[in-house]
Amino acid sequence: MLQWRAMGEGDVAGVQLVSDAVHPELPEREAVVAARLRLYPAGCHVLAGEDGAIGGYVMSHPIRPFEPPVLDRMPDEIPSDATQYYIHDIALHPRLRGGGHARPIIEHLLAEATAFDSMALISVYGTAPFWSKFGFAPSERDMSEALCAYGPGAVFMVRTPS
Image 1 (cartoon, rainbow, N blue to C red):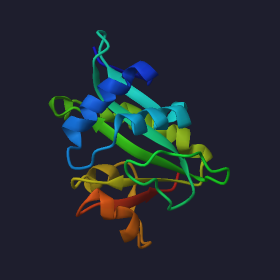
Image 2: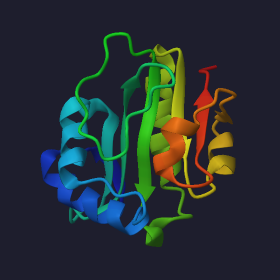
Image 3: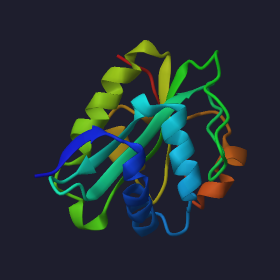
């Protein structure tokens, strides 16, 4: 049975395997994944089986509004004036998609983010309709510079907690 749990240092290699399968055109080095975990462990979770195999993950953390981190760049710190909760990445191995595995962790993140003014994420691969089901909407702000590394069709989306 697969369950979401806190990500640990020993999970980083498994997270990297899922990331490589899901994001071959948007790679992040394993060292960057480990740095994100060290930076904000409360926002990092894995979907794992009883055998410890990683089937999915999420990495999230506070940011300054409309200042998402650069893809594959080592994070420095959480800014003291961070008021927007950012979902940097959520990924499920392709064989696990459609099984309802994403909803529990997204609902967890939505609850965690109530302490912030808003939430944000960058939708890739045409997932904006999926995210809209959780109250995210495309930002009206021009985010083209921040989105260029994420490929055509990337959308910066924002959600204000209700």
